[in-house]
Length: 68
Image 1 (cartoon, rainbow, N blue to C red):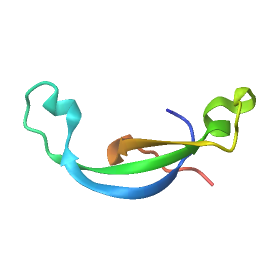
Image 2: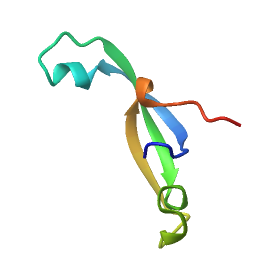
Image 3: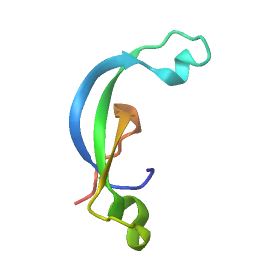
Image 4: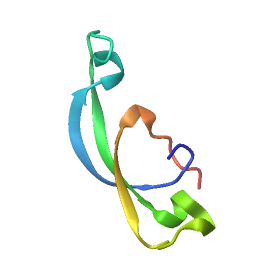
């Protein structure tokens, strides 16, 4: 999903940073969001049903603002 544009569907609250937890390190909380992508955005012309969507849970520090 890197480089793709989605819509933040909703915030899920703060959770411990999984990158640090994986190594047994202290893990500060990071905001987690549910982000919705269309199949057209993810797969382009190859999307079988371009209007279908996929929701992914993504931490705030992994989300980049979309340039308008």
